[in-house]
Image (cartoon, rainbow, N blue to C red; front, side, top):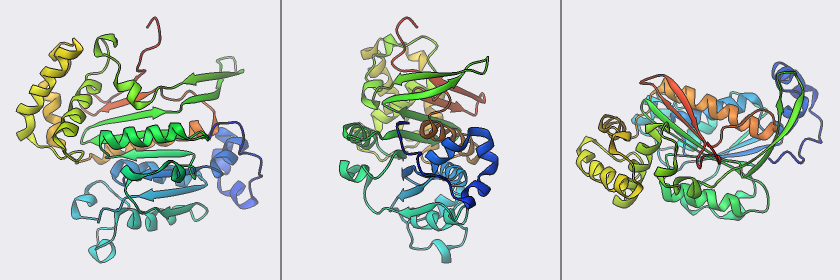
Length: 329
């Protein structure tokens, strides 16, 4: 939602009673906007289930899930929405099983399944949504969906989120975003931000980035470049890929004029070994942050992330990166 409408209808007495505590935190107007927002999530895993739980409990208008992959035992490791009973999940898609569980969290939120392949989503389909979240998709698919969101006449916020065991990345594209920021004195001030697309962000030459840029940013770019060039599905990697990935790192660093030490071999090995494994605690952190960011975007209140967020359990730190960096930074 773009903050220029959508909050006219009043909350029902039932909504006001149910969401009383959070209305005290972010106000009636923000809750009304949230109750009219429509969210699409492509890819149901440990991280996105945490996010879905958060926005369903917060009272989003509707949530649509897209993931036709049939549930396997591996999905049980981090996806708490899938009951550990194959008589319940056997032969069903991740989206179908997660949809049933999410409806129990908040009956007032419309949760549904959208069948299809995210890589084939057309622009007209996206017009139904205000927020699009993509996870465990190839770089090609993320770029495709992000570009389609930008081409629509309505404002559609785009988020990409991925967890690789103990590490995680969130990308945010709010296009042009206006929001209210509270000053220390308690006064409200209108702010405006302009976001680059994912393609624009990852195309910035590495030599133009600040020296303090997190090493995880560069490592994720090397890994997704390797997966794309080799035709691999996201996370379809093992430690046997280390020699080829190190060669890819060398090639990219030479082209980008970056010292290879900025992308430690140990970090690449951790990401490769992770494959599609997710650490539940890291999923909770990333899903919680994404939930907060989506609520900020919808309510137009509070400083949003611009435009990357990284978390690494190895040091317990969360880092925001603004790429390309603002002039003079």
